[in-house]
Length: 192
Image 1 (cartoon, helix red, strand yellow):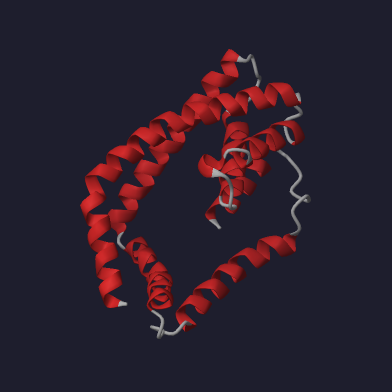
Image 2: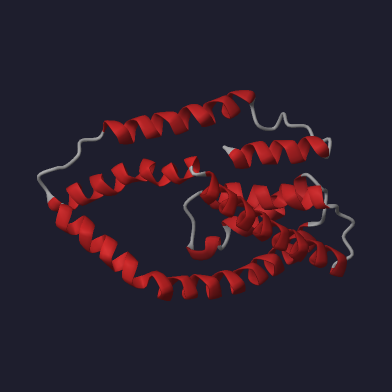
């Protein structure tokens, strides 16, 4: 929901018409999120079959993951790290824009990043290959009237540059928290 709001705020700053997404869709998004959480809450606690019981426990634990949003210290760290991350991505895109001699400002890059983030939430190939490029090229060609080839080169370079530090940090995190993940899976299996 926050991504959609950021997207429309950035687009309104660029004076781009928002009529390409119906108002009903914007109303439906928070309602759908509430229905999903209500549906998860209404699920039974366990089932006779162990695998289904494990799946139910995992689904029931999803709302508990949002409990950290009530802790201001955790949220302050999350917002700081997210802001730094978005700032780094904005700097990467600004450098790419300068290298390719694109006349784009920071709000235009934010619209592209949010568009990619929204589309990346859809099921896709590993590393969002394809959907990432589609979203980036769509935003750059339809909203900012860049050529398809130029848009594709910028988005492909951005995706490649983005994958390198993400994979390195992901591997570091995996090896640091590997024992915790195994312990949590064992705990869930024993509970099922």
